[in-house]
Length: 173
Ligand SMILES: CC(C)(COP(=O)(O)OP(=O)(O)OC[C@H]1O[C@@H](n2cnc3c(N)ncnc32)[C@H](O)[C@@H]1OP(=O)(O)O)[C@@H](O)C(=O)NCCC(=O)NCCS
Image (cartoon, rainbow, N blue to C red; front, side, top):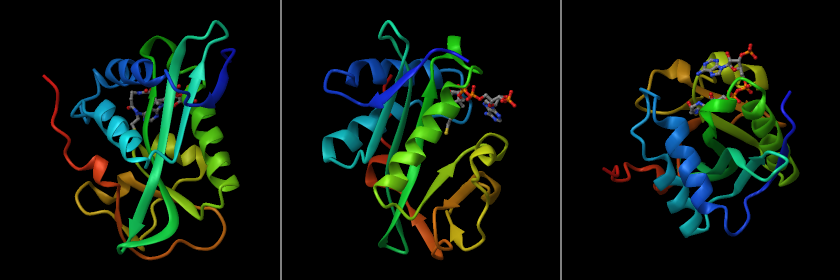
């Protein structure tokens, strides 16, 4: 396990986070390479609810995870969406992503969140307890990739909508 420090995003991290998102998603066929724009839009609107950075002891930023509120049938039910999650390619597979997700979920619980959704690989997010929930619908992607984790009571039912920052930001050249 890599020697890691995880902390909240600080002023001055934005450029390193954007560079990390570029690098991490460059080879991802499911990405439209706008993750840095999503995070920037969330930050600018004050909707970046949780933003955690993973740093090496010397201070290099090698991982990042963002969480933002989601609406369920248009209502705020205290649920959040995880994403994007990114780890620098050179240090993937060493537990950085796992540590970021676990830390982020802990922060959400401490904030009084009721649950979290993620659009991602069931084989990865299943390890944190995320699973398909028939009552929570996310139109578009195959339903097996839309996963939920309820923190206390069962998940509310309805259609989930992410923050408008996720709505087709223009891809940079
Ligand atoms: C996905 C990502 C964040 C994982 O971070 P990481 O630090 O490499 O992951 P960890 O070291 O904590 O976990 C590694 C484990 O996850 C598995 N894993 C990694 N990516 C996976 C994927 N896409 N699907 C299924 N399993 C995956 C590895 O096989 C490994 O499994 P093991 O523990 O059984 O050996 C990282 O690979 C990444 O930044 N990828 C590019 C960006 C991306 O796809 N982000 C997620 C979009 S929501």
